Length: 155
Image 1 (cartoon, one colour):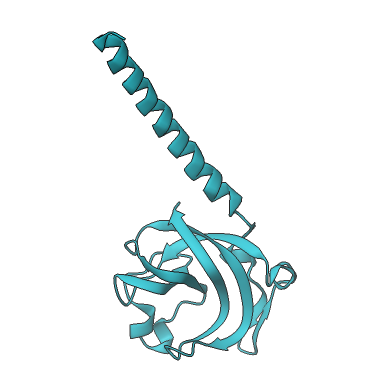
Image 2: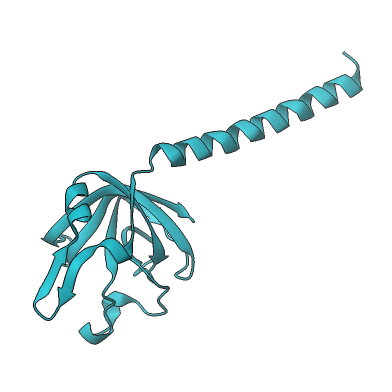
């Protein structure tokens, strides 16, 4: 094999390996894509008397879903959970009063501590949907809707 042939073969292998890596990453993301839910479709009603989850959300409880939103400013740079919001937030929702708490939030729980992205970046989250009041035994945070065993990527 001549040196030029060897260099061409290495470059071709590099290009093929990179293409395979990109395609594999896309397949992994696609394989975890569940039914898409949106902030607009979470509730059937919401008011002073309380809220009622939309029928579609109730039907998806316990199933894999995908949701797009913004990561609220995290309490620490690496965590097993974060809050997904409809709009980017400049404040930590856990550090503000009830008056500042956004109405459209979903708590995201991951299996392992994960580095989090900055608050202004849109993310796509995939995991198992859980609804109903629940108190996190470690933090004491109360949530009404969660995506558990989640993974996320920049959207």
